[in-house]
Image 1 (cartoon, one colour):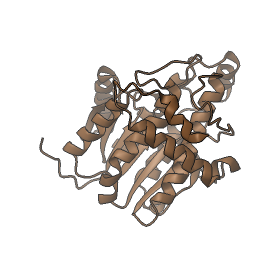
Image 2: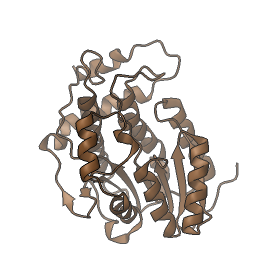
Image 3: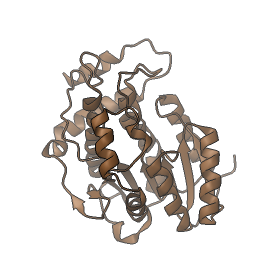
Image 4: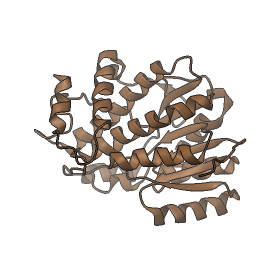
Length: 295
């Protein structure tokens, strides 16, 4: 496969068939950047590509198919990207799911853990060399100011499952990951930041409890502000030196819960995530053996 030589900004965005992802892709496409749309549904991706290209008058829109609940699919997508492109200015991790009941992936992982944390962890690590070669570059992860503390003895809710706790835990993992990644990237020309998009109406709330849906309906805003901020974080020169920071959709820097800054916890999660990401489909080793690292 022939690599594409790119002079303009190249941005890879996950979760683009969702509300925030699609709005962000459109905003960045309007800037003239080359945008790669990543999601698991090819038909929805093609529709999104057509819509974004028409609305932005930008023909440099491509798609990349990956199922974030499947480790091998994420790795294949990263490999495909590196085969086709020789440059990456920004990776924006937006994809996330909320499930009211515990679901298990083909890799024997809890679905929210796999999709919201492990998949972006793997995709980011697989693309790090390309991001470093493209410096200055950025990694932006969409999350929330979670206060959920992780139970490392039951990280995936096998013993006791709560949908809200698991979702909140995955958002805390996004923060722990971002801060740990930022430290690892110091001096490389690659920066890692997190963004809180605020309350936005999206498919993410479909299976949430009724009271949360009600609150969202009352308080949720359009995704425009979050999309504009994500675009700025990805391509605006004023954020070129930002690293290890947490921003709100209005551009203000915010502080997350003190728990998220605990370096020992950050490293604990990183180690477990690395071990799990090395799983291969068909392995007979129980995931619990990996989680023993936490005890």
